[in-house]
Image (tube, rainbow, N blue to C red; front, side, top):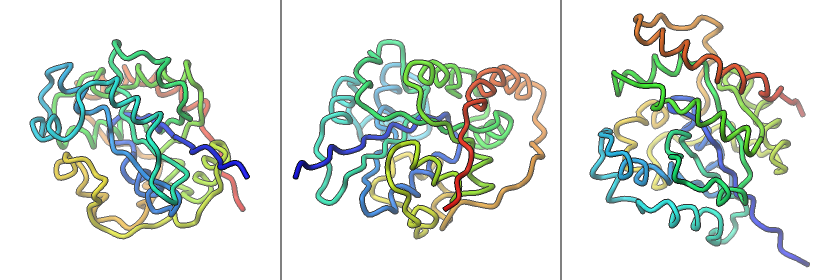
Length: 245
C-alpha cells in the first residue's frame, strides 16, 4: 500500500486575524504538526524593521528564504503526522521571494474586517502602515494560488461549521479536537509569543462572537482601514460557507 503524501497547508493571513487560535485548533489534532510564522526572521532581516523581540526572532529562525521554503516543502513530518500546518503572515512575503517555490503547498486564507484588525494590532504597534497589514500581498497570493478563504467573524460565529468547511476544501477529514485546546504556551510558538499571544495563551477555544458592531478608530486608523477595505472585500467575496455534519 502506497503511503499518502503529507498535506502541507500554507495558511495566509495578516496580523490579528485569529491566526494563532486557528493554529492552536490544528495543533490539537493528533495528525498535525504546526509551524509558526517561519518567514518572520527573514522578513525582519531583509527589511530592517524593528518589531518587539527583533533580536530574539532573528536568532531563532533562518533568515534565508530559500532555506525556509525548502524546509516547508520537503522536510519529513514527525512520526504519526500527515498534515503540516504552516501559519504564515502575508507581509512576510517580500518581492524577492519566488512564488513558484510555494506551488507545492496547499494554500488557504484567513481574513478579518480591517477595523477589527487595527483595533487589536495597535495595542502592540501604534503606527501601522498598509504594508504591515499584508492585505495587498494576500490578494496577490490568492490570485496566484487560490484556496479557501475563512473570515474570522464567521469562524467565531460557528467554529465547527467553518472548520468543517475548511477541512473539506483542503481535502482532510474534520476532527472535533480542533474545537478546544489546553490553555498555555506551546513549544511550537515563536519566541515573539510573549508580545502577541497573551489572549490565546489564556484561551481553551475560540472566543465568543461579538456581533456586527466594529470598534471606533481614530481618524488616521479609520483612513487606513478604508485603504484596506477593497482588498478585504475581494477576499471576503470568496469566503467559505459553514458546513454541518
